[in-house]
Image 1 (spheres, one colour):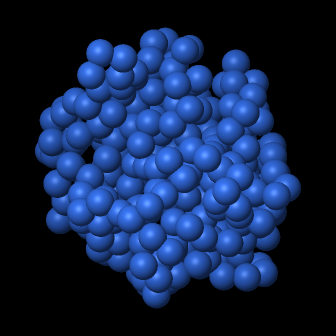
Image 2: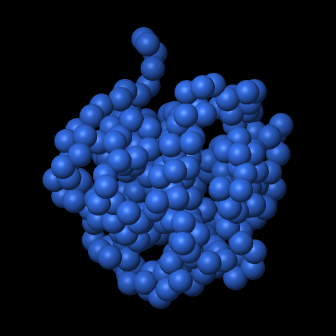
Length: 263
């Protein structure tokens, strides 16, 4: 496709053929996707790609990257990426993580914050919210879960472009594969570590931006305060009238905050 801004590549890292999406120019930034996989190249990717080389790996077991049997929880997956960054000489790198991907990034930072230059966490799972519960991915259809991830579908045209209408067979298969792999990684307890807040106190000296929608139905906003309190110096940006996807629902504001923080 002549005007396509991204390309798909495969690299052998940590003993695995890791498939990733990449586009743009400039210093690399690692983007870790959510529990239902990489949603597709979005407007915020295009804007960031003007100044950064955006690297979006498909987690093992998601999309086109094969499952790694030894990766059985989020900590294992973080260790996989730590090894991949070292083998590709990408340490330290800027990282942006969404939902499950945010948990992975935060866990990596708790183990060794020096592997990142800056960290952006967008409504990460990983901690038990003081009020409310993380929405159970497995009692809903994937489509219903996605619809619940935005406050108002009609006000999020990019979301409707991605997920409006009936799912294609390819989407349905990818979502079901992602649900199965998410179950392997984060089934019990569901999407959090009981002691993760104390582990996050090890994230010292790493500039961290937290981004959340106040009406998030997937990871309640109360979890944001746990992250902010646990990570020294973390900045919290909260959007009103916004659900779990500020990068789509509040794209312009999201990109402005992202560019400011990464500058």
